[in-house]
Image 1: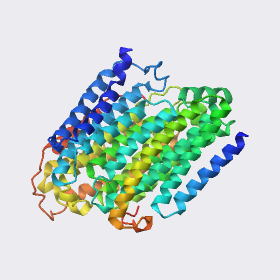
Image 2: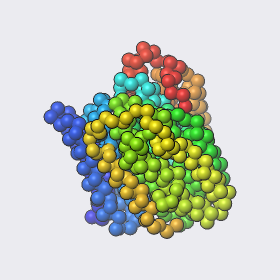
Image 3: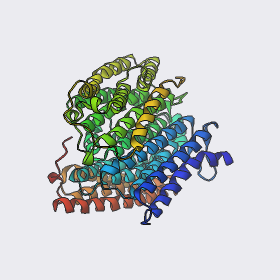
Image 4: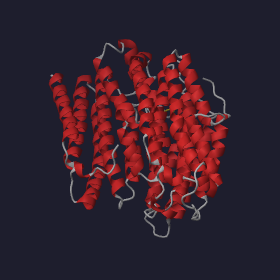
Length: 472
Length: 98
């Protein structure tokens, strides 16, 4: 019982913290600074609690009270750690970002914490309606954060697109749940798994249709190939720290629940693998094609996020549903999160007032004016491109190895080819930073040290994660 | 008997999809999404009757609560759009070209 409480404590801290921040933001005495550091402390405490919970094994928490809808595994704990760390760095980057951009209110930080509570719930949920509610808690907070700059037409358009398409995907998820409930008389993963084991996957059309709708919703939220178009517009419309938050924490939560759903039964996974194979391939190459054509840095990072979704789908295709640990997926998510969050933390203080620097050309000659920032950005880009000895290389290495072990040689080869193509747009920024004369001086003083410190810590993370060994 | 309810549910769901894709007014689009969610609710209730348990009813209530929260946000976005463009046509929003 105490153990269960310990495992649930990070979610409780985050949920209570979010409500507390929302209530305190009504007081005028508490300014944005205090709220920013308050939310960072909430994330830090929850992270430490989650870390201390890692010593215990898998558990169905409060199986009497919750009727087995929340299950904590090592995979969900790792994903929780990634989400909480992302939240921590996002709030600190935002603190610096809002020194130069003037649309912050204390509710911003509260919503960041609310989104994290939805994500944490999503990693543990083993029941379809819980997944739906967690998905909506996360999404509703993220929609508001995307459109937070209410005076900006572009971010309004971004939130409109995201809201329409997100709600559309949510409706698909509900319909899929209804079908699965119709077939199995339950929405719990364990019951669905028992039903498929006794009746077979291909014999029940309701299960096939229902799981198809649910996969569509997950692929949409993860920005995989046929449903990737929204991500570029939304990332461009959102503010830099929030874009980083969406690209990392949201993706970690979605892929955790995606993997949990897919491995609930071996035949269900086998039934969808051949389609996921093509989706993974198209996601990688379409993402690369889009990224090559971009002039804006944020749009390029959004498109590269699509490519990374493709790599994660390779890992999903390769998972063994009988002995599922999720270590490869969690490792890649951590490696990708460190690199992406680092870039967005750097953009938070290099972007300037009103994010005036956003294209590749705007960063020409950065290395002369700000050598440390340029070096940090280069390390993040190299990690995302997969150059040793960074975390991104090890993540790709584990993914490709697991794909080969699962017998998906073609997918492994295509993954490597896509990784080589992606060098093009990562190296382009490095070349712009190092081999051009500066067109401007980048001489405005950094208003706050939070984001630069985040960037530095994430550089260390990129190397530290690459040293962490996992068993495939 | 269950078939009739399911057919109605699927027809409503498809009408919702068509509405989201073809309509240009923001309000109509959000209404179409509500229609899709309610189609799912109808399916939940119908299946609940088939299985002779109350789970489906509870699930439908949950979905309604979430749909209400989503509608609240959607209306806020509609007001924001109207402030910017004085129009509720999705065509006028084409600054971002994905």
